Each structure stands twice: as C-alpha cells, then as structure tokens.
Amino acid sequence: MIKVHNIMQRGRLFVLSGPSGAGKGTICAKIVEEGLAQLSVSMTTRAIRGKEIPNVSYFFVSDEEFDKTIEEDGFLEYASIYGHRYGTPKAPVLEAMSEGKDVILEIEMQGANQVKSNYDDAVLIFVLPPSLKILRERLEKRNSDSAEQIIKRTEATLSEIHRIKEYDYFVINGELDDAVETVKNIFMAVHDDPEAIKKVRKNKVGKAALKMIKKYDEEAKE
Ligand code: 5GP
Image (cartoon, rainbow, N blue to C red; front, top):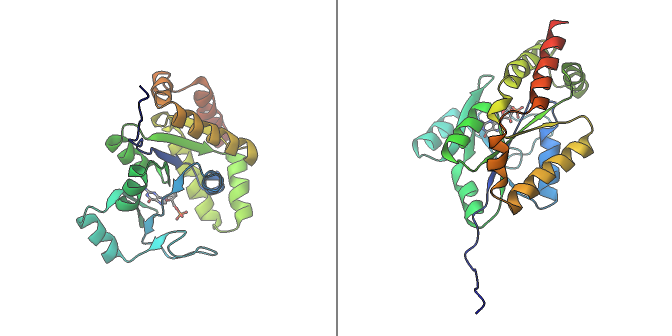
C-alpha cells in the first residue's frame, strides 16, 4: 500500500548576521527572490533612513509601541544596538513556519543567540567581508556613516569576529555572486537534509574561521 504523507514539514529559521558592509541585505534579497525563504520584517525604534520603505524595510515604531510588544510577548527576539531597539515580530514568523516556509532573519548577534537558545534547529550564518580594509572601503563608499561611525563599526566587527564560533556557518563575501551562491547552497543543503546542521556543529569552528580571526586581528594592529 502507498503511504500518503500529508503532514507538512515545519519551516526552518535561518539567521544572517554580520557587520554593515558585509552585503547581508543583498544576499537576503537574492534568497527571497529565488523563493528559498521568506524575509522577516523587524520592528525598530530608530528613524527611517534614505530609501527605506515603512513596513517593508522595517516597521518603524515608537518606544511605547516597542514596550507594548514586549509586554504582549510579541517578539521572537529583540535587542538594543547603537542606542536603538530592534525586534523580530513573532506571529508572522511562526505562521510562515507552520505553513512549511523557511524564514530568514537579518539580525545581529544578541538576537541570534536568543533565537539559538529558543530554536535549537535554527541555522546561524555569519557574513564577513574578506578584510578590515575592504570593510572600511565599503563603508566609506556607502557614504552613510561619519568617520567616527566607521571607526565604531569596524571596532564592533573586530569584537564580533571573535564570536563567530557561535555560528554554524561563516561566509566570506568577496565576490557577491559567489557569496550568494554559498548561502543558497547552505539553505538547500539544510532544507533537504535536516541532519546536515548536526554534522556542521560536530565540526565546531573550522580552521578557515580561525585563520580569518587572526587576519582581522593582525590588520587591526597595523
Ligand atoms: P540598521 O540600523 O543598520 O538597519 O541595523 C543595525 C543592526 O540591527 C544590523 O546588524 C541588523 O542586522 C540588526 N537588526 C535589524 N533588525 C533586527 C532585529 O529584529 N533584531 C535584532 N536583534 N537585530 C536586528
């Protein structure tokens, strides 16, 4: 007799973190464009910037609204960064997952750790530019940060990189197309084989990651 499986598999959570200038946004957009996952829209108390679109880039809310969402247990995770608060609304993420869709969260490390402690099978990916020099150049080219902010952001990256072992994968974004391809492959590998992530965790932090930490540290001393 043929067995019919009509119980849909729950979607998975993917977290993408990394410094600004790492290309996370572009990578996420490609993943969504290719239908590999749905992107979660965060809530933030910071002001709208440049070409951002309300309710698409972020839900821009007041401090009161943010507090209310915390009280109602409406966040999957939330954190304070650079004096502003950011959080992932829980309901749309859980709904998408219950429909079998994978969801991608573009969030920073504090939030990533909260997700990891609540969802053991979440997949954590850290995206990094190939060097501190390239990171600085990208931030300067973007022209949205002051010289002081660029120093702050590169310092933050230096302390974050020492914690990349808290992530399951790290991807170096030198050539955007290659980085997108790598992230896509991670999505597909984990989607097709839920056990894949356990194998990665067994390997702990790889040699490539240690080499990268050393490279960034040496560059910072120059
Ligand atoms: P930005 O203000 O440049 O858009 O974002 C600042 C940082 O906040 C980025 O590292 C971004 O990934 C992170 N972020 C955006 N949304 C969320 C969120 O919902 N939760 C957490 N924890 N971080 C977020």
